[in-house]
Length: 226
Ligand SMILES: [Fe+2]
Image (tube, rainbow, N blue to C red):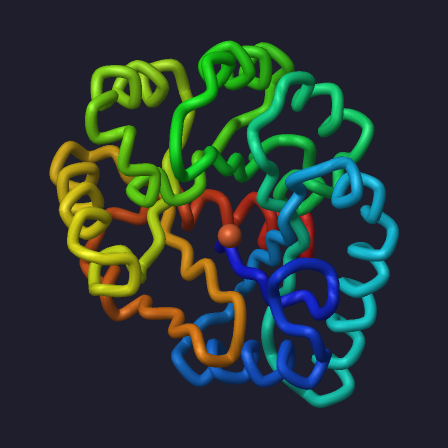
């Protein structure tokens, strides 16, 4: 989960050919399901839901035409903001699989907004399951481990990037990633690939806990169809 593979919608690939190459690269590494999570960071992003859906349909069609055996699931990586629950209600396609349940939430890299816990709690109250995207990349969270534990106790889940276990983001991120893993605070793995140059790196996650991702795949793909 957590990829930027859709062409021309965010800082992912510009061409559909690169999107196809990225999927083929993942399939060659044994990945069967790709959860596509374009950014929703500002009003312009929230207003382009229809073009995201069109890009998704077109990419799925091309994969089918070329005989690529991969399930593509549409979702989004939504930046935390006040009123997020309402935005998701109006734009369910930004939730994972459009199911209106799991939602991948991005926090700023530099500091924790004061309204974060409040927004997350409102999402839970509205029956969403927030999944925090790559918390290990938000280094200020190292000093907020009590808060993270509280979030997880309340039902919030965490998604770690596979690349955080090598040097993709540097030593400090690697250190926080290991700490979160050691404390049992990782529920999903994601690659967060943005281009054909990025690695999926799932070999780094082999043997690590991933029960939740199996549940998610079943929910999004097996039970309801991709
Ligand atoms: Fe991302």
